[in-house]
Image 1: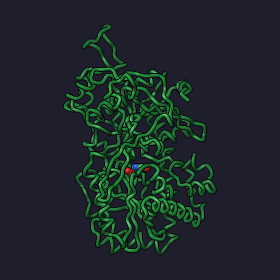
Image 2: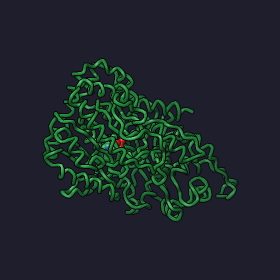
Image 3: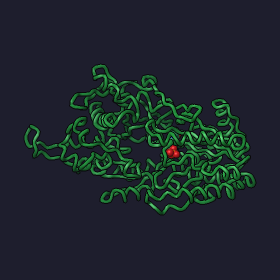
Image 4: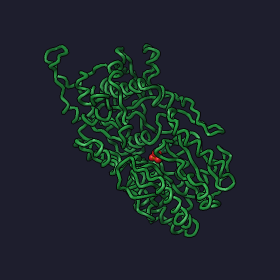
Length: 570
Ligand SMILES: *Cc1c(COP(=O)(O)O)cnc(C)c1O
């Protein structure tokens, strides 16, 4: 199991991501970014692409969420044992942190596809006897600790990752940075290009940034300047030191702070955003760089519920390996689409009754909303006018929520608290459930089991969004603000419904809360609820279009073919 050498025979594309979500048992992800990374590698394995993934082992995961009676989120470590899923590789490498050597080792996880494709994923780990006690904890918690710990994690990921690939004997033809956390790998590559004037360190040495650019691909995921990782140079000098001279780092990563996004932008030959709109926004944010767009996707087989897997197997053979075939969804009879959906709904409701004690009514239109509880996602928007919601939805709606707030995100936690509070106020009139510890397992049941998938972020902050793609795949139409992927997937009344104004503005200051809310209520009342209850055939038509016009395209197979042709082979 620990024989990795079969993977070093051919040159590979190295995919670096601070978080990767392969399954709920390996809790090294916080949300969409990590699950995208996992889905990317799964599709790459299906397509037999020569890749290797690099991430952190995060031995205590992101965290386990419980919610108390008052709606307060509580966090506990989501500890897991890498030895249960992976093999510890015998090769170690060193990185310099605060001037001392820190050993880095890696765990090999094999991502196997039914096609025979297989991709190695390396989980980096500093918990090694011989490292200082504090250094052994660097890779404990995903996004845990203070800024200094974040910097250390990013050194382990970027520099440690590049070095361990080298130490293991990998030949890497492209380094793909999934978000800026891994940008330090560019400094390692830069250091490898150094032409010393003599044998010693010399001011007149030169570095070949062009050569590094040829090797690097960078995908940005953050549409606001404040979302990008930045480190003060005081801290950088202390923790990172000068793998290349500080003046050069400042030239590449910013004068006042080390901006991980700037570093990646300056040293990558191909840069992209994760949806068409996000590409444009990033282009405005970073004039002077050429920024492309490759829209995110989901791994079709991972996210299809067992009910739809069976249905697709019957009517669309080959769909899992060629999701484009879902365009032929109209070959499936309406009743069978509806039966599969009812199966997924019953499966979810059974799970909810078991875990929360709440019995939901399968005949009532059920809306789902679950994702990281970040303020821009506005999880509690639908509760803004309870009287109106009751007038529209009493006896006709049920709501299911889920999502974790980052442990340091007070406003995010308050959103959860407000949703729980509304649950009480609506008691006896509209059932509302908040599922604890939203993770891949919960998503797998929740998303296919609701009737409508709600998404109402402040535009343009949802760079892409992927949960809506999981919904569409399972015949669950989206009801969403026109942001991220939905701008591309939305055809009003055909694939689902929009909320609020069309996507024209790119300014973050345009918070259309009132407009969005009015449209949300209005469409629920006049379009969505009547269609669901009075025209089942019309509803099923939208379900089928979600599959045939959204899911056939917004998947990681299609996405990876684009990365290969547009980013990797240049
Ligand atoms: C898909 C998924 C996400 C991403 O949801 P978005 O709505 O795209 O933000 C987050 N968390 C989990 C557990 C998921 O499965």
